[in-house]
Image (cartoon, rainbow, N blue to C red; front, side):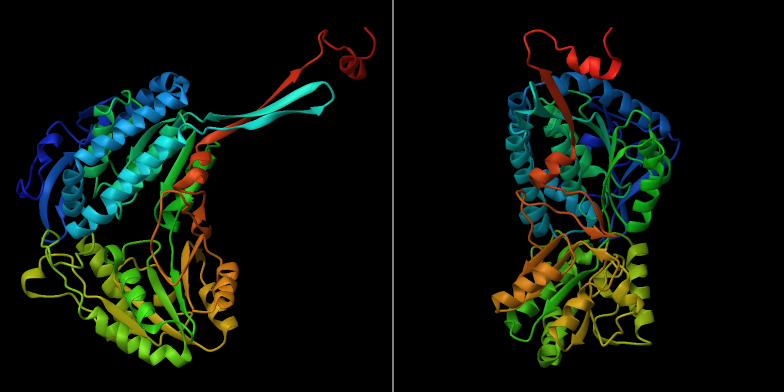
Length: 511
């Protein structure tokens, strides 16, 4: 079943490419076999834009079989050959950048200026980075560590990787999982979120058009319960990589453990934004609004808890609320839109529930409601600032995934850093200070995989992304990510001209 929905060709120029289905297996699009369908919905209007057949267990099996068949050839290609293919891939992505930007905006509700300037360029840059990384699959130099023996270490690909990507950054998360895996010589089956499969499918098709062999990249568009669990538990999948909530990550770990898979988890976050009393207040206010509202707050690294030292607290609350009130909600495809909708009405209502419950114990300074008028049919929610909540309250401790910033005061530096660390999460954080020693202490003592100083949210391909504590383990991007998708082999040579017998006599005696 292919239903192009109500999207105009201008909003969805690539829609005809999905006529054959939403599963990409062995280099071609096919229809799912679960017997059930799912609709991709434009969250800015609530209208269906594409309906497709969901993947079932048989589709996962076919995709894993295709990946397994492609592995010997792809893993034995030289690093230079894989690098050349990825460079061609980056060029194809650049040629199709506008198609990717529009498809991502349509399925996620992101402002088009965000997908054009952040999501798509970041993905192309990631592809170019891993094209270079493919030529650096290095072991360690040889050495004589045991008498007349020479040892060295090889880095080798693992096999078939089964990955699950979330709906908040469908294109970038697909790239973060696919690129290091295939650069290292693995093949992959990716399950995107059923809400947002479009750009993952475009990504796989672009890879094929760039000359990456059939079966190296496969996409199964299905539910987590059916397609996702079957992929994670599949005996021919050697590694699982998952990005999503901590609760679902625990289930992924449980299923993966049954077949002793390598596991990479990038889970939830509740990023603290710590403002010391010597910070540049205006810079911190602008950083907080940008950091809290990026992607409508649907970002594991978004600034969600601002801790502001008491001398700046009231001014920070007042100025942040005033700046939030200037943020323009609107059609993601309109040039003046700053903030789009949340991914769905279900998610919008979930966020609203957190804020509504917080009214009993905190102060909602601005926002806290869905807009009406032209936006009433979309999953919109106004930028919201909540002040004076208790540290142990729900809105401070739980991941909301929406355009909500909570602000709390602190007195001493010890208290501020302690509050920043006082959640189960540890994905990202930021510290704001003009004192290099104060800032350095914060970067050392805040328990998070990334700590920005006087900024919040930027990421680069050359540096790792991943968390501490309940935010998971393993790294995306960078050479550290590349190594996640390799396994290490120790090789040892006996260098004597005539095979030695003394070692054998030590074990067996004279024979």
